[in-house]
Amino acid sequence: MSEESYPDLNTYRHDLFVQEDQILKSVMPEAVALGLPPISVSPDAGQTLYLLARMIGARKILEFGALAGYSAIWLARALPRDGRLISLELDPKHARVARSNIARARLADRAEVRAGSALELMGEVSKEAPFDLIFIDADKESYPRYLDFAMDHLRLGGLIVADNADGHGHVHESLEPGDRRRGIQTYNRRVASDRRLVSHVLPIGGWLAVSVKVEE
Picture 1 (cartoon, rainbow, N blue to C red):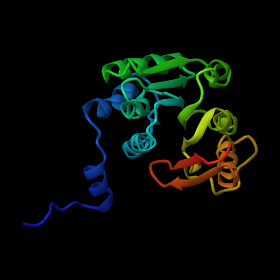
Picture 2 (picture 1 turned 180 degrees about the vertical axis):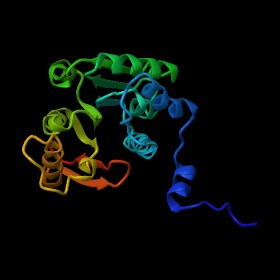
Picture 3 (picture 1 turned 120 degrees about the vertical axis):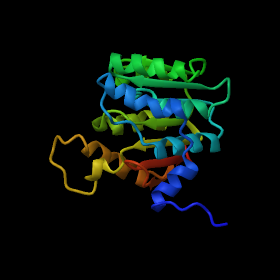
Picture 4 (picture 1 turned 180 degrees about the horizontal axis):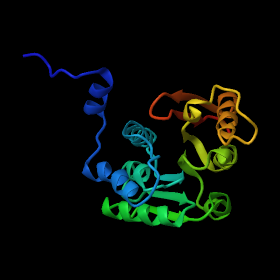
């Protein structure tokens, strides 16, 4: 008997490999209904984040940008029971929604959302370093500053992962001064050339730039 047929390769890959349960499937539709923007990572990217965190045995994760908690759920599920995820979210409403979804996923024992400017919260968060994985998915103009923090507070062998490395489809273009996507261009150039990192882009969702720290 032949295997089941799929309409295209992407459908095959997604249906076979992306383990998105009903809680994850409901997060963004419900968040959008509450007025949050539909800009979360894709299910493919969520599965990849989960895989990467499990591969390195992550026990402590820092996330820049929580939105509705979709990516935080994927990452927190990769942690052991005594693991810790800290997610920083600028918008208080987004933070409340993310906390609710994390609690609904029964992960409040290992994941927390802190509301406020990530740039202002860094001092407090630095006391909890080193981190095993740092995920960057916040304001694009600040990506280089988040990278600076990550390089100083990531363990050797840890991962830095940045979403939207494709600059929403425009990272390869010459962008006008003031375009926030220039922050992503700077970020990409830096992780590609920093001798302390080995980096590559995974063309998943809005592209994930993945870097492993190989030198202090």
